[in-house]
Image 1 (cartoon, helix red, strand yellow):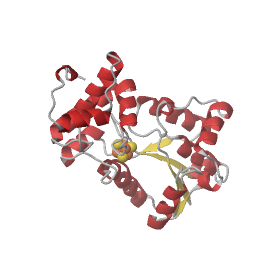
Image 2 (tube, helix red, strand yellow):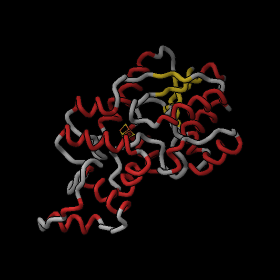
Image 3 (cartoon, protein in one colour):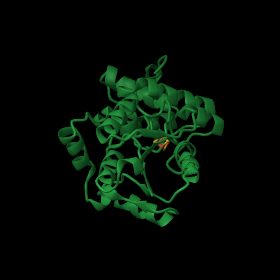
Image 4 (cartoon, helix red, strand yellow):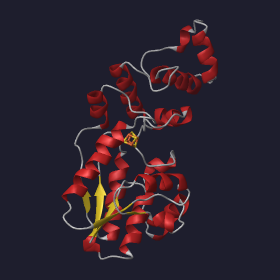
Length: 252
Ligand code: SF4
């Protein structure tokens, strides 16, 4: 019997792996990781290695090989909260490929935390294979997992947690919050630039009313000149076709 942990780079999946090691021999546990090159933050690889060493279990990687941006280009569309095809192609399909190759019975373990009740319920409705939710069942919140990993295991948390709730891709196209994208613009400008290029390549914008390029101009203006223009003010200006000549500059 094998025990396959969906090992994502987040604190929940690290804790799930740990809880599974408390019940089963290490040689029967698989830390299954699907990479999203140029999407996953670089510090995720360091964190995953640290956790793998701490648990004494190697990481099993099964990946598509394409970057997040390759998949966007190949699909000729941008992912969204409604159509997160990047997850399907780069994670779910890779998982399926691996599960089909396993020749003995197995259980899958996810890292949903105690506050993710809705996600757990949704996963239970959809699951087609034996799946367990050890972190959720142990009633451990994300905050508690972070404290245990940082203070008891002595492992530095992935840096993405300084800015975001989850250690997802940066950027994650499932996010519809301007504040999220502001943080990507501010702390991960190269990734923001890749998203701007993806919009220009696809000819479609992530937000309905303004492009990421325009949004970057607002972020830049507000940061550099301290003359704040809110997004709703900008949309009104845009809607009324008013000219705001110094708003747009070269580059983001
Ligand atoms: S974390 Fe976000 S961007 Fe990355 S694969 Fe999942 S949905 Fe896509």
